[in-house]
Length: 166
Image (cartoon, rainbow, N blue to C red; front, side):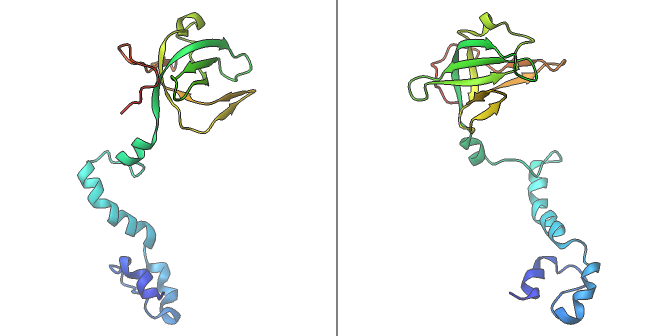
C-alpha cells in the first residue's frame, strides 16, 4: 500500500504524501490525520443526533445483546466483607436461567426482609465478578437517589420471573 492510498482521506491538507522520501519531513504540518478523518466521518452522525451526541453511543444491535431479565429475590444476606455496605442476593430467574447470585449496595433504602419476595431487574449475561469472597453472577439494576443511595429498578406490575426486557 502506498502513502497515497493511506493519505487519501486527509487530502484537504497541503501535503499529499505521495513522494515519501522528499515529503515525509512535511508530515509534521499535517494536522493529526487520523483524528481529523474520524471527525469528518462522524460529522454527519453528530448533526443527525443533535448537539448531545456522544461518540460512545451504542447501536440498537448493541442494546439487544444486553440480556436484562426480571427475577424474584429468594434471599438477602448481610455482606460484611464488602467494602461498601451491601447484601448478597439470591434471585430466581425462572426455569430457563435458575437462581443466580448478586451483590447489591441496597442497605440505605432496603432491609433484608423487604427484599425477599421482591421483583428486581438484572443484567444476566455479564461474566461473573468476584466481589471480595463472593462471586456475583448478575448485575442487579438500580439508580442513585440525590444522596447516592441505590433505588432498585423494578417492574410496576407483577410479571413472570425470567421475562426479558425489550
